[in-house]
Each structure stands twice: as structure tokens, then as C-alpha cells.
Image (cartoon, rainbow over all chains, first blue to last red; front, side, top):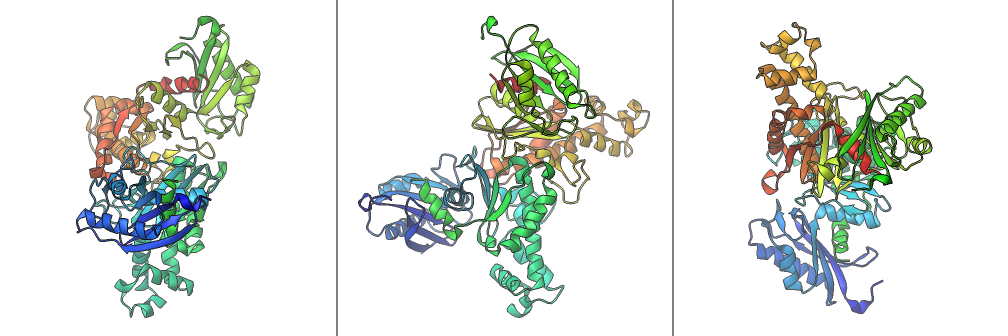
Length: 316
Length: 316
């Protein structure tokens, strides 16, 4: 344990909707959290920095800051200094590390949120002890990270781990990125909802009652809840998303042969309902399955705080 | 330069059809090569080891052996001790490193042929000076390797870099591996020939003269030769293989964000005829192309000796 009078390390995770900061100790335990709403992408950039600083200072609760780590939902440059682009934030090449160091007077570390979550899972969670691991985060889309020898592979542009836009279906579903057939169009929170909408008109489902028969009302949590009630439409929606998860994971395993594959993000709370079809597809799709140990496909252990905990590791 | 009286390092590449050994100096230059025919997969394993030892001893030409590196066309375990499986050889878990050390009385290094070629290109060839690189070898199928910080990523089972069996088309072309839609069914020497066969019956082509009108007679070198003569069928066959090369490379770049992508293997001798459509498909398929430096897709520089040269690096 760090002595109390030495000050605290704060990890902060800035996503599209909220800013979550917390004091993280050197065993990965979180205390004194603070929450802010993300100001959105149509504001001046200093407003976003204000929200970050407010959350950090509130979380620190008067203790001095030893260091601050920031996990950002966006592209961070390979030096870990700038947010190059973030779909839900106004930043374009924002020198966030320098700006925050100037305002906070302590060292600041910066990385992409999926990379931070992977660091946390490697140190304290589902990838603990693994020499190599892949992290796939399933939220609205798919993010990810590659861990080798306990380190995150950041890439020449800081853009390694962008698994969600690997093409799995030529000329497939259109994607927000402007291309077609991206993996996250088949395996993500959005894909889960789209599957349920399409299936709901084909067969009876409790989703009809939940939405007064309007498929457009379906949300991801509704599909999870319906699946827990044994609803067949919800079950099929998860089976498809899980199947495509396994197909994409098989491609990554063919390339990288990791010890374990950790699935995080909101959709992963479905557990084996998602992971069993993924494991099945992995076994059937992976090259040389008969000559290798097939890596485990396991749920992340640290939940929505993983990004914040991993951010703190940048300065610990 | 190593003093003459210190002995020599021999690199040896064992493929499906031939065994090529050579003395490799510490600047990657090759002298005193020796060639044997690979005994095939239906012989006792000792016959294959005999062929290896003969080629190595002949290449060494009476000099003492400082070390021997072996590049094998097959799966090598993560410790670099055994050939677990090789499609054209009788080995199944063969403890090749120990066997050869016993017979040769010097240290022996062992790795997969694509990994060895990547090591050679990283030290002396097209990936020289790159912090991270992908190597894609296009022969009959596709092999590959991942280089990070100048080191080959070998994977938990020694099976990293098996790019050829990443699925690019769901329920696509059947593959020798027993699955469907593998990348190498669309981008490889075999794919080139299959494309040319299908196109030859649709439009006039010099391939008709070369084969007396029998598409089954087409070989890869014929398609290359026809393309050099400006033949449109051959041109289209290369364009398709190049397009799919770029699509697969885009998926790998999304995951790993390397500085450079090196294309080796026999098909890569076509140069820009293959690489231009690949670069074009990479630009159009790669996520965030507008926010990053897109890696170069370049031809390997060391040719068919790359595996032998990289094997020598295992013991240099």
C-alpha cells in the first residue's frame, strides 16, 4: 500500500456519454469515484477538459495527485500524448496529456479506453498471468486490444486493436465508418438489437409486449431481459451475435495465437449466452484446431470500471 | 566478419519439394549452397533428417559448424524444438532440434519458414528499420509472420501468423483445411490459377495457345508470363488476387497497425501487378484511413533464400 500522505492516483474514463473518475490503489481497488456527463462533440474543447478536471479533483477529495491516467473513447496517437479523433467528442489532435499536466500539476498518462481495459484485465482480471491475450470489448460496436508479454501493442499510429472494422462479409451490412461488412455490424450491441428487430416480426416474443409491438423500441437491455425469461427471439439474437463473435475471434487467433481471449463491454454481461456460441464457432472456424490448444474465450472480470483502473496503471 | 577458422553458420530451408542449405555470413550473404529433394511424407522420418544432414554437411564443405538454423514448412512448437505437423512431411511432433544437435554436434535453431523469412526481411530486407511489420508470403497458399519490436511473435502454440486461413467469405470457396472461405482461396498462387481458368473460357487469351485450350493445363508461371505479354485474362486474374490481398491486409492492419507490410513468396515476383490492386483495396477497406499513415505494401527483397537466411539468424 502507498502511504496515505503520499497522495493518490486517479484513473478517469471518458466515453461518449459520461466521465468516470476514481482513486485507484496499487492493488487495483477503486474508491472515491466522481461522475460527470460528457459535454458532447459540439462544444469547445476546453469544456470537455473542464469536465475531466472537475471529476478528477472531486475524486481526489483534497488529497494531492501523484498521477492521473486517462482512458479515452477515441484514437490516441502512438506517443500517448494526443487524442487524434473521437466519434463522440470535439477533439481533433487535442494535446490532452500536456493540457492536463499543465492544469493538474502532475504526470498524466493517456491511452485508448479498450487498451486501458486490457491493461486492467491483464493485471487484475481475466487475463491475469497470461503471456499473450486478446481483449474484445462489445458495446455499441467492437473495440479491442492486443496484449503481448503483458504489454499492450499500440501500433505505428496508436491504432492497433481496431477489430470492429475488420471486414467479415464482402459487400455486407453498411457500417457507420462508411464501409461495408465490418465485424461490428454482426457482433455488437447494435447487431443484437437489429437481429431482435428482424426476428420479432417472424415469431412470438415477449419483446412484443415490452415494446407494444414496435420493433424500433427494442434496446439491448430489453433483449438481455427477454433472453433471461427464456424468449426464443432473444435467444436467437444472442446466438447470431455469439456466432459472429467466434468467427471474428478465430481470425484474430489464426493471426496471433494468444493464450486467452477476454470479452468485455456491456454485451459481455450476457455471459455464456454469448460466449458458448462464440466458443463453438471458434472451434469450427479456427485453422489447425486439431494441432493446438484452443484459447479460452472468457468474460472480462472488472466490468465498467476496467477502463478507469487500467488508466491508473499508466502512471502507477 | 567472423574469422575463417571459427567455422560457419548454416541455414537450411525445408519445403514440400526441396531442401536448400547454405553458409550464411553475419551480413546475410549466402555462399556454398546445397540442394536435396524432400523425401516426401510417406517415408520414415529418419530419411528426412538424413536429407537435411547431407545438405548441411555439403554446404559447410568441411568447415566446422558454429550453428545450424532450420526453417521448416510446418507448425513448430512455441519452444522451437519440435515440428508438430507439416502438410508435406512425415513429421508429427518430431523433436527435430534435439535430433539434429545430436547428429551435428552444434546448436540448432528451429522455426516455421514464414517466421524465418520475416526475420531475414527485418534484418536485411524490406522491413529493415521498421519497429513493426507484417510479412505475408504468397505461394501455393498464404503464410505469414508478425514482427513487433524486431521480434517475431510466435504465439502460445507457435502458430501465430497463420493468415491464410482467416475467413474472408462466409460459406465461401472450400479450402484444403476442411473449412470454407479462407483468405488463401482468394489470394494465392492457387487462386491465381483458378481465376485464370475461369476467365479463359469467357474471353480470348494467350493462355489458350499456351495450353492448347485446356484450362486444366494452366500454371502460375504461365499466368505471370501471359500478364507480361499484356494478356487481359491474366491481368484480371492478378487484379482479383491483388484485390483480395489488400482486403486481407486491411483486416490485419486494423488489428495490428504495423509500419510496413512485406509481401513475399513466389506470387510476389509479379510486383506492382499484384501490389497496386492490393494497395488500392487497402486504402478503401482500412478503418480510419483518413486519420492514419497507411502502411506501405512492398515486395520482399530477399527472394527464395529468405527462409534460409532467416534460419541462420536463429543461431547467429
